[in-house]
Length: 321
Image 1: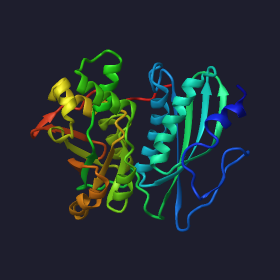
Image 2 (image 1 turned 180 degrees about the vertical axis):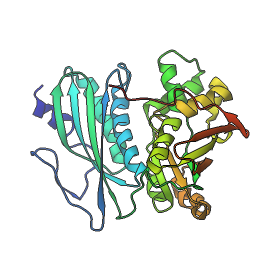
Image 3 (image 1 turned 45 degrees about the vertical axis):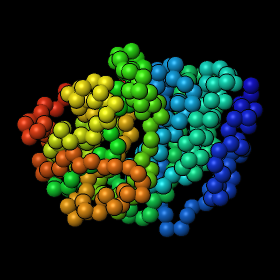
């Protein structure tokens, strides 16, 4: 199938249609209208088969996750998503795969009122790059560099589930049907915390999404903010499925080091701590306090029931070249 036929068949007319898109798919560029008194947040992520997802991952999950990881980046900045563009490299034309891929793509964009406005398709190894754009009010962007000593550290949802789900898919971990279904779905279909991100943008100081693992991503905040942290690992939010599957001790290790959770990790000062629960109440997302920022630059300390706990040597996923 020719490129423009492929685009027209699977991507040109599907999904959510926004009023602020003046020209969408079909021209050399998309043209959009910017909302007044809003700034534009932009993020790009590439997913490569065999590197960022297993080669036998269902097409629906590939598309869904590619959108989710980009929306998660916007959420970590407190931005409301608006548009995405897609660059898709395919080894060959496969109608069934593309139908499923498009369904996964539009499942998430429809839910978050995001429109696909352009991109590219080429023949080559399976990979996809998505650029996502969203709005944020001036001076409201959440960053990694604004944590302050005394801030409380929070994490949304539960941690470690996606990593366990990946190990199940790779045959490294056994689980019963209920545990497997929950954990594998957390890996294949992560939930970007978009509503939570916008809810905390006037409350939180620093924020990041947990993509490479709690230890690794918290250290990004510590380096950027020139602070330290004390984390109580007995307070980490762990799902019943994860604890039932691997036991509490191993669940803690997954929560500390496994990536792909795409939960938000953020800091809140004492003054705003009391209104956090109220701000999140409409999002149906729970945030758990797991520790506190300290003044010891770049020093991460862990405790289990107030006893020092070793920081894992492999603190999370590392991007190597």
